[in-house]
Length: 390
Image (cartoon, rainbow, N blue to C red; front, top):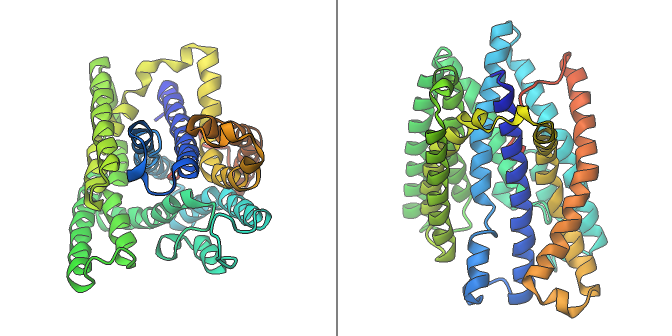
């Protein structure tokens, strides 16, 4: 993919999604501070806000589709250049995902120390969770306090490993690998759910829960890889009408997702909603060139900046929110503390400024360092993770 309008659209989507995740977490903090942890007791409008704007998972599904698309585009580009190898692929993924992840984890540990562990009262410094995060196993032991978005990196690491294995098994036939991977993931997830239900009575704390969720969501990531395999065929056929169809489709599933969160539906309904969003996100990506962002200097700059912002925004905003919530908010007027909307703005604005300044600066330096490590210029394609994908 070398269509500049498509590249800019992907940057735009990533940045907006990352900012919406930040807003979701800020709103969740505010509502919890004002009304408590049980959202079923919230007033109607606040409960609705928690189920809609306060749900960032929807946007993480979009990140998974983007990630699958961009990762396979990267693989295909290296194959065309005859430079693809498993060691180089692994180095590319490690140098992309680890630097800012380590910075974010260090920031979360610093905030834990500065706030006296206020995010997890009564808990000693969670060394085990910190170590688990370093090896992408946090979903099995719990997220490090103030670093909740890192759950998606656990998924990403697994998907990065599985995809080239599938390609090799399928002799590099991408569509076949995506279909076999999706069917296998769905069947295996169902099998794990059956074992979890029958052998462990549906214990919500059992390690099988994150296991089947991770495997089930691989289907969403594979939708992006499948999109990459038919990109040259699909993009010329994407009309503005199909683009609007994708937007309406996403709006419909978003409404269903709001209802699922509002009524606290069962876990499998979230997975089905994720499956339903994947084709719509794929169509939205494929129709991005219709935005014609390259024709405006302003939109070019904004989209590029949002693309650079997306990964640091996703990984660094939570520790900042933690610090503001537990070290700053109680010093502010009660009128701000007790208003969910003022509380949200007071958290979201400084966090956005922090990631916009320091986060973007760090991202640019990391990408320049990564380019030197990989021995070439930075790729024109966004190297997404579930956040840069959350």
